[in-house]
Each structure stands twice: as structure tokens, then as C-alpha cells.
Image (tube, rainbow, N blue to C red; front, top):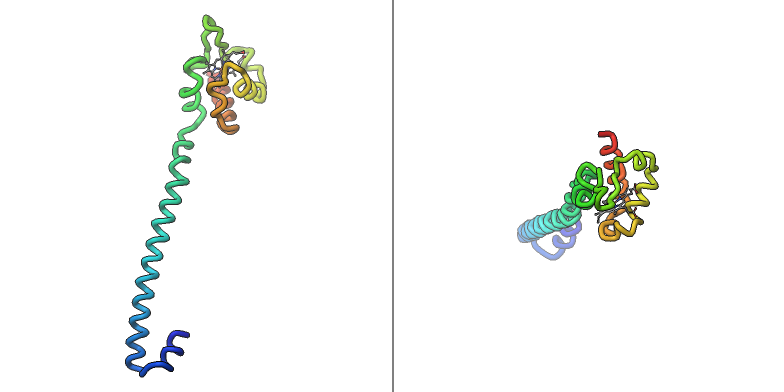
Length: 136
Ligand code: HEC
């Protein structure tokens, strides 16, 4: 060890071993502290990354639809003809392509309130959830 070589030239051997021992103990303590600090930091960063993604994980199509779309289109997607809210399970909606549905979701002025907050993969989830509703 380098520490030993330099220390040995500067001190008597017994004393030197004692000092090296002390230095090593201090080093170990510092290493331990550093490791703990790193661990705490890692956990903090992990939580920071995980917590938002946990709520994202709950963001499946069904949850999203219930939270953002069901108020108008109904939990079953049947819509409210009396209020001019179209059914999402009509033959017409079944015939629409995924892209058309996605466009309807993001671009219809009636959706201005909900669509802005939707990420592209959330729109995809919604489209596949609408497909599920259409099968029922
Ligand atoms: C404020 C009420 C409201 C909310 C909330 C809403 N919609 Fe709509 N949606 C409408 C209305 C009204 C139309 C018809 C508008 C038009 O054709 O211009 C429509 C049309 C659609 C269409 C096209 C259907 C068709 O056959 O023309 C789709 C698909 C759709 N909505 C999906 C969604 C999804 C998915 C959500 C949730 C992110 C959602 N909507 C939230 C009111 C709403």
C-alpha cells in the first residue's frame, strides 16, 4: 500500500502500524458514511423516478377512460344521444380506424378540456380500451 510505504519512512514501525490502523479505521468510517449517503441518495432518486411512474402504472385505458371520458361518453361508451354525445360503440365508431379514433380524441374541439393533458401512449391506451368496449 502506498500509505504504508510513505508512512514507514516517516515513523517508527510500531507507531506507524498504529497510525496506519487508525487511518484505515477512519477511512472505513468515511467509506461507510459515503456508502450510506450514496444509498440514501439512490433511494431518493429511485423514489423520485418511481412515484410518478406508479401513478402512471395505474393509467391503464380503463382508468383513464373512467377519469376523463366516462362523464360524457358514459362508462360503457354508449354516449348520450340526447346531449349529442356520440356513442363510441356504434357501428360507425367500430368502423373507424385506430388513427381516426386517436384523431377524434386529440383534435375534436369538444375534447379541448381533456385531450391536451393526454400523452400519445395514453391516447393509444384509450383507443384500445374503446375497442374493448366495442366488443362487449
Ligand atoms: C365534455 C364532454 C366530452 C368528454 C369529456 C369527452 N368527449 Fe368525446 N366527444 C364529445 C362530443 C360532444 C363528441 C362529438 C363531437 C364532434 O363530433 O365534433 C365526441 C366525440 C368523440 C369521438 C368520435 C366519435 C364519433 O363517432 O364521432 C371519440 C372517439 C371520442 N369522443 C372519444 C373520447 C375519449 C376517449 C374521451 C376521453 C379522453 C372523450 N371522448 C372525452 C364529448 C366529450
